[in-house]
Image 1 (cartoon, rainbow, N blue to C red):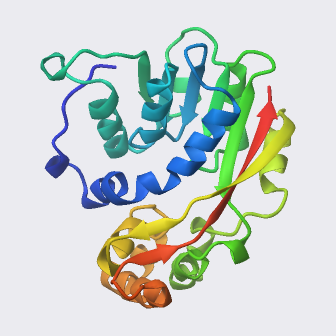
Image 2 (image 1 turned 180 degrees about the vertical axis):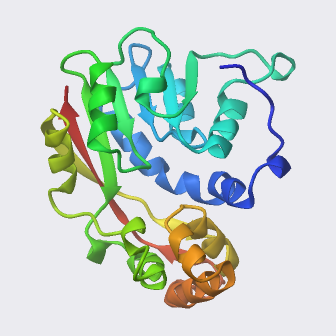
Image 3 (image 1 turned 90 degrees about the horizontal axis):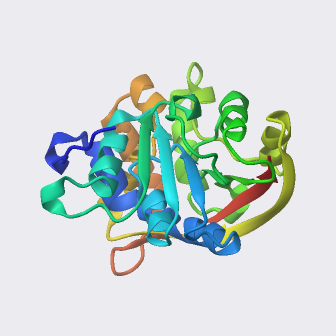
Length: 263
C-alpha cells in the first residue's frame, strides 16, 4: 500500500466533486457515531466503502488506527493522498491501511474493534467478511437515508430512478425501509443493538454546485447511461428549484439513520 500524491486535476470530475462538495454533508453522521462509540486511541476501525477518506480522517484525528476499503480506485487515490502523505509533505501521524476491494482484501493485522459502512449499502457477504476480522462483541455500524418524507433530497434522488427506467431503475437510489438495516445485519450473522438518527442537511453555494454534488454520489450513473448527463442535470436542477433560497444557495434538510449491530 504505497502512497502517491494525487493532483486533483488527474481525477475524474465526479470524484473531485464528491470530495470538494458532497462528502462533507455526512460529517454530522460520522461525528455522531464516533461520539456515541467513544472512538479514540483504543479504536481499530475498518471502514467499508471509505471513499475519499474523510470519515477515516476524522477517526484518525481522534487517535484511532484506521483501515479503509473501497472499489472506486479514484476515490481511494484521494484517500491515500489525504491519509498517506509523501515524506516531503509531512510525517504520517497516524496508523492507516487502505485496500482496493472489500474486507477480504485487507492485509493481515490486529482484529478490528469497530466496523463502519457509512456511504454504501454493503452486501451481506462483505458485511459477514468484515465481521470475521473483528473482535467478538465489536460494534458494526450501518447507515442509510432516513424516511423519505424526512429527506428534502428525496424528489431529486427519485429523478435518477425515473430516468433509468425500466432497465436500470434497480441500480438507483431507493428509500430505506424501516427495518432494512437491521435485516441486513441479521442476515450477516450480527445482532442489532441500538440505532440513532442524525440530521445531515445538504447545503450548497448555488444550484450548479448542488447538481454537481448530487451527481457525484453515484446514484445517477444508470440514469446517465439511459439518457445523457445533460438531460439528468436539467431534470435534477428542476427538482432542486423549490429549495433555492433568496440568496441563491440551496438547502436540503435530510435525516439519516444508523444501526449499531454486534459481532
